[in-house]
Image (tube, rainbow, N blue to C red; front, side):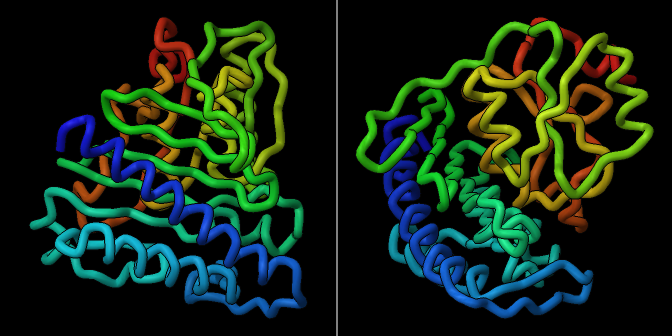
Length: 267
């Protein structure tokens, strides 16, 4: 797809993300029940409502493209391996944050082409913020549906480093690795918001040790890459999607300043 086609799809995906966000808020503002999946991760009616809104909308937009969503992840690799372009969706990234009612959850929609995210949309239902990007078009942030979207750029490495990190995860190993980089300040933050703060030049580095799923990261990876940063493994290679049977990512580094060799410093 060329940049103009991606831009058109991105604008449509933004509308879908806001529609899904509204469906999530309807549940968020009610007394909702919490179930658990086989891996013990929480599941609510908001996950399902968002999933249905997004998948229905994407099927209307691009009926020929497959959709892989967290809520329909049972598609076998023997089928997925044939895909060269598909949608990758997390209808509600940060369900634990949703259950805690702290507002730090997002809707993630990505278009994957040749194992790389070429379009990404991240929407925060509670704040109304939206971040979006497409390959060759740059990254943008919108504070509310009425606000003018502004271009996003990562910033040079700051001192001390601002390091957004999960409220639900953290380890001694993470602290030891971060100590190699000099002074830093942690910024507790849930879901894909960590990537978006780096893309907006408000933070510097997100270090993730432990598994995440590809739908957790793909949309925000596109936003961060198009803003000038990147998401790499500890060998310095960009995260890839659908490259193997497992849909889990390994450890990774999300950074803002491309002039710093983060993988070498942390390896």
